Image 1 (cartoon, rainbow, N blue to C red):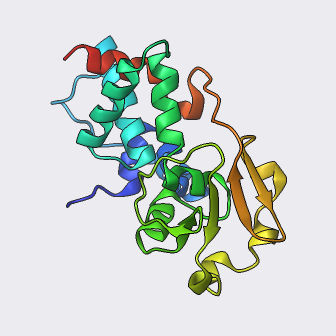
Image 2 (cartoon, rainbow, N blue to C red; image 1 turned 180 degrees about the vertical axis):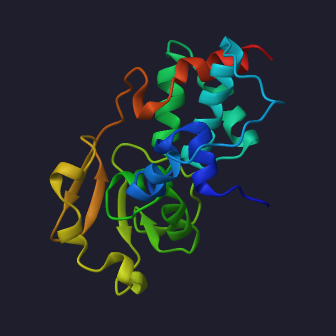
Length: 204
């Protein structure tokens, strides 16, 4: 799969999609004058806004178009739920998203890799699926054979209460994270208009 350079993606979608772009180096790159592109329209539109929000969410959460469309369908199908709120919830409770939100891994890409390589246990069972949806009561820990990795060294010092989501508890003595609730949705959270994302797919 061919991937675009992260700075190029951030210039198009915004610096929140990659942590690498929230740096002075990226800010400096913005000062360079872009080459004019006569083929692209500079005008805005509702469809363009919705498309951009969808693209931002896909990149931020590292999911494919097929995965993302499935999340949207499930969010819209859940009775009594706000589709925007439900979409946000499902993306945030992915195991890779949860690991990144704990604050000791620098990127979601690395969080996905950590899960895929089998470093993570959920309820004492090795779980190597980044899209695994955690539930209230689930306990996340580091596999015994992985605890000596530099990624998890001084974990108790890296994880501070102020960095943890309100819905996650951390036991410093056992180095276990417990899911104690669910993420709370707010409009335009994470710099993404989830309502626009839902509207984009409803056009289909």
